[in-house]
Length: 255
Image (cartoon, rainbow, N blue to C red; front, side):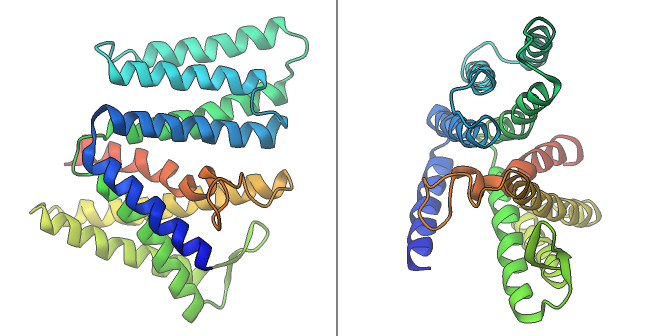
């Protein structure tokens, strides 16, 4: 537990400092996080962090980083088309690539590269902090509510320690934190904020459960050991992956 707390504090301070600084260094850090996550998931899927499936996703991540960091912005749709087309071409003409493998490759591209890319898209916006507030706030409230009041299992086949009471506590806590956050910014679209907060909290839990289901299906405890007491990068950022797009599109379309 002590190691987990120390790692969490040091990692949290580092991410907070990088987020405060913003700019290209922030994008580069999240590009690095994306590449590590690709490596971790490729080790689980292919037992090789530099398999073809990993390499094509590293290239996808590099393309999006260049698109974000240079004047070649708004090329995302082209890079996405190129990425999917390349994978289908390889699937058709390479007999060693079956439907299972191509599905796993595109799964990594969607789950890791595309979802994490939204952390770059929200760079420079004050709402980037909302991603952390929701992802880690929901998790914290759910944990303590579940410890104190948890009686009914939420999804025991995937995550036996999570409870329905904990999930409700996470949603309520997330909503309270979001209302405080938006009130501080003098944004008072309360109906939108409440709907958004509940949805974002649910997505945060889905991110956690999705990671747990992958680990159970592939028989692994953690995605890696880079973060002592926490596991790998994906073990720590599984909720962020789902919350970042939720925050980005809410800010874009409803505020």
